[in-house]
Length: 185
Image (tube, rainbow, N blue to C red):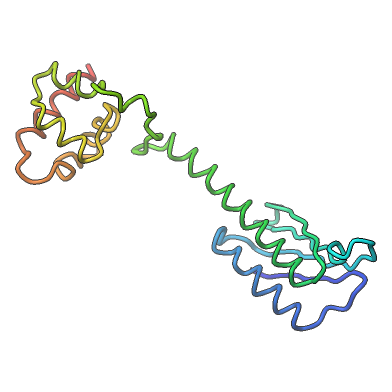
């Protein structure tokens, strides 16, 4: 990622340019496809000493503006730090939103299980006991973090139920698969 640093009402030293390039390169690990960061460092004569330097930045990816931010400080290096921290937080938040959306919609991924699903007896326990699955197998499922019917269905669909249950549970794997198949009809 390239960093294009410009100064307004001030001369940029090599140390400040190197510092900005080093700091802004951290953002590339959050979005590797970032082309460049356009950074403008401005010195303003204000009454408040903590607002003397304003650092504004635009992150560009594929010719489009991805993110914009601004930070103020008494020192140019501190303003650069504050802006990088701000942009890093925003990039992480963007990534979390996208990851959360993918988790809930992509095949094989499930949304987080609500707390009411863990109330005793759970729906999983009731349904499986109705189909003749013994309590030992149900408790073993819960130990293996399979606590809802959706999680059991996903484990059967992925073909990972036998692996999750472990050795010695071949018959129970067949019985659970049969139950899940019956419930689909």
